[in-house]
Amino acid sequence: MRYDKGHKEATRRRILEIATRQFREGGVAAVGLAGLMTDAGLTNGAFYGHFGSKEALVREAIEAALEDSQRKIEASVASGAGLSGFVRDYLSPRHRDSPGKGCVAAALAAEVARHPAGTRTVFTTKVAEVLSLIGQHLTAGSPEERRSTAMSVYTLLVGTLQIARAVNDRLLSDEILANGVATVLRLIATAPNHAV
Amino acid sequence: MRYDKGHKEATRRRILEIATRQFREGGVAAVGLAGLMTDAGLTNGAFYGHFGSKEALVREAIEAALEDSQRKIEASVASGAGLSGFVRDYLSPRHRDSPGKGCVAAALAAEVARHPAGTRTVFTTKVAEVLSLIGQHLTAGSPEERRSTAMSVYTLLVGTLQIARAVNDRLLSDEILANGVATVLRLIATAPNHAV
DNA sequence: TGTACATCAGTGAACGCGCGTTCACTGATGTAC
DNA sequence: TGTACATCAGTGAACGCGCGTTCACTGATGTAC
Image (cartoon, rainbow over all chains, first blue to last red; front, side, top):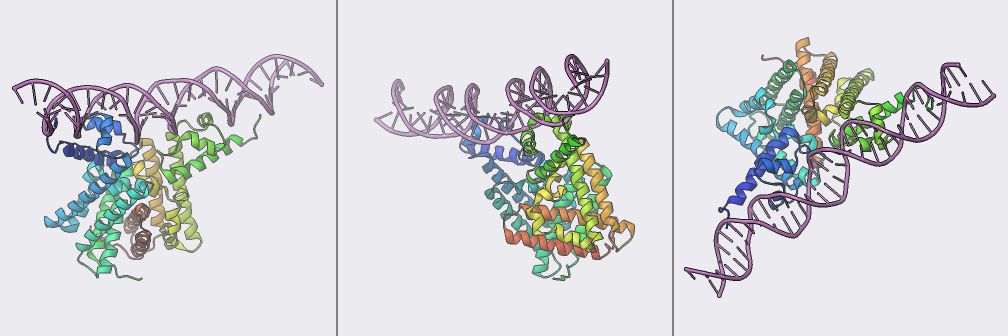
C-alpha cells in the first residue's frame, strides 16, 4: 500500500480533532467541509472516505468533546484540586476566551437542540455521564441530593459561561464568571435541603 | 400615496415580529431573508426598504426579544406571582417546547457571542437591564447580594433551559427543569452569605 | 525476475441549491399648475 | 377639470458565493503467477 498502516486512522483522527475545535469556535453551521478538509491538508472529496455525512461527523465530534469534559473533571479530582478546581478552570477567563478547546455544551447546546435525533441522543447520553460523574465527586448530601446538585452545578456552569461569552463588556463578563464560581462552590459545599 | 399612513411601519413591525420568532426557533444562521419575507407576505427585495442588513435586523430582534423578557418579569410581579412565578414559567415544559416565543438568551447566547460588536453590545445592554430588574424584585440580602443573586438566577435559568432543550430524553429533561426551579427558588429565598 | 492486476487514500471538478445583497422597474397615489 | 410629474412600497431577476455531496479518476503500493 501507498500509505503506512494506521495512516487512514490517523487522518480520520486529525479531521475529527480539527472539527471539534472548529465546531466549538464557530458553531456547526459555520464550518464548511471544504475548509475543514483544507485545514486537515486534504481536498474536499476525501471527507466521505472517513465520515458518512457532516451530521455523522457532528455526532462523533460532540461525543469526543464530552468525553474530553469527563477527562477534565477526572484529571482535576486526581490532581487533588477536586471539583472546585474544575469549576474554577471552567469559569476562568481563559476558558471563556478559548471556546475551541472548551466545553461543547456551552458552545453548542442550543444548536444541538435543533439537530436530528441521533445527534441529540449522543449528546444526551454523554451529558448524563457527566452529571453522574459530577455527582460521584460531590461529598455533601444523599445520593438523590448529589444528583440534584450535579444538575444545578452543570447547568449553572453552562449558563454562566455562555452569558459571559456573549456579553461585550469585559468587566461585566468577569463579574459574571466570578459570581458563578462563588455560587457553584456554595452549591457544592451545602446540601440542597430539599423542599420537594 | 398608494398605501395607508402607517402602512410601512406596520410592515416593518410584522417583519421584525416574524424574525424574532424564527431566529429563536432555528437560530439566526438558519433563517434566510427570502423565506422570512415570503412569510411576511412580501418578496425578497422589499427587505432592504425596511432594514439595512440582516445583521441590523438581528440587532433589533434581540433588543425586542429582551424587552419582551423584561415585560414578562414585570407582568409576573404585577400579577402577584412574583419572581417565583416567572421562574416557574421560564422553566416550564411549555417554555422549553416553544422556543420561538421564549427567551432569546437561551436560544441565541452562543450565537450572539460570535456576532459583530454592535450586536453583542445590544445584547449586553439589555441583559444588564434584565439583571437589574431581577435584582429589584429580590427581597433577601444587601444590594450587592441581590445583584449577585440576580446573576446566579439568570445564568441558571438560561443554562437549565438550554440543557433541557438539547437533551433527547423527556424524563431527564423534565427532571432538569424541575430541579432548576427548586434551585433557583432556593437562591431567591436565601441571602448568598458571601465568602468573598 | 517480470508482468498484470487489485487495492485504496486521496483528487478535483461538477451537481443543484440557497444565501445576502443590488437594482432597474412597476404602478397606485398625491401634488402642481 | 385635466394633464404632467413626483413619490415610494414593493417586485423579481440577477450578482457572486459557498454549501454538502457525488463520482470518475490518479497513482503508489501489494499480490498473483
